[in-house]
Length: 439
RNA sequence: GUCCGGAUAGUGUAGCGGCCUAUCAUGAAGCCCUGUCGAGGCUUCGACCCGGGUUCAAAUCCCGGUCCGGACGCCA
Image 1 (cartoon, chains in turn green, orange):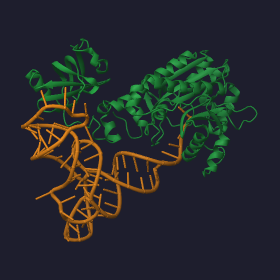
Image 2: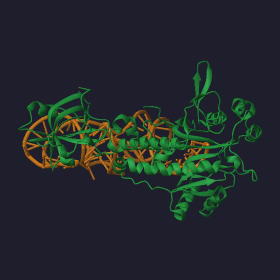
Image 3: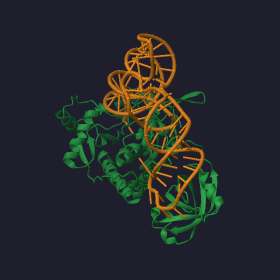
């Protein structure tokens, strides 16, 4: 039975006449009108209507359907019947219905859209929540985004790599790391593939990208933070910050364009039309950004990171003037950025670091990196860190490493802004936040 | 972590001192119904987060706890 030919519901059309089909899926709804019963069967691609007539359908099938519970898994073999009154212009008249797995009731939540559930309830029963077509659509689009990122970066000469997530030291300072037990030693979950990417520049890989999980042990509790996220990271040799910003803006446009082209059905299901930004994106200097925020009433000190309110004001002003959602904030104060960001030669208090913003959300940040071992050691000291603990990091810089630049792009933030999703938890199958560790 | 809201059937909600033996929807069980597409009609089932207090009387007011949401903070 499992090896039999199976048709997805979207492959069936009214033009198929009375062809035999076999569908497999979940019982979405049963509407028993007495003399006629409609059973809606849902699979990954859609919903098909199976119609049973009390007078002509074999009684065993009628009673089988009457005893089915919602969300049970069934296969239906039957004939296609073009029917104007049926959704999609066809229905399936069954010859055989098999129950493969019975669903208990009541269900932990509604799957048909009649009753909304809180995010908490949905995440507790995520396996059911993910059955809902509009939730499923997010992850179909996520797949398209990943596909499109891979094809774009590959066509730009980047090699996909994977680097360890279990690491020995808390390398970057900055964010808090999750400690774990690694046999008899302490280890950490990696916060960024940064140092590995740079080692690969020393190793002569020239251009690499990695798509993988990163972990942040920060106790933040907001709509746009998670403790485990997927980072799209690149590093490019013989390149500066301007070069990688150009790659980034073209990547964003490419992803938006491809998603609009390839994921139309899922976008319609979510009722969103992504707004494509065309390169070049606005490049706003940090100094200009804080000026805009000050004019909008925010009190900011040069040298500090932007507040959420400041980001909102800046995002709105930029949107008014450029009509675009995406923009870069460039020339950040060196002290606000990680030690490996390259300071400008003639103005070392600002660095060749940038953030890519979508309105008020930071979706990516990157920089040209320092590739000189002495300068790097100096910067480590200036940030109050111990150069001794960075020895294995510093080693590749002593034996020939080209100038290089790169960025990290948050996949979930990209999806949020692409699909206008309010809470980042909706963009991850099984989100990990301050409170949630299962499922 | 701070501030502000909130917690009522499986799910989503109304009620905010006595009219609550708690509203409505959805769901489940049963009955009627041959074109539903949030089908319809009738019957039944199912809930006040935990602990303490105030009061003749608490779902409702007060205190503590737990959990949730939002904003902010923290954050390559």
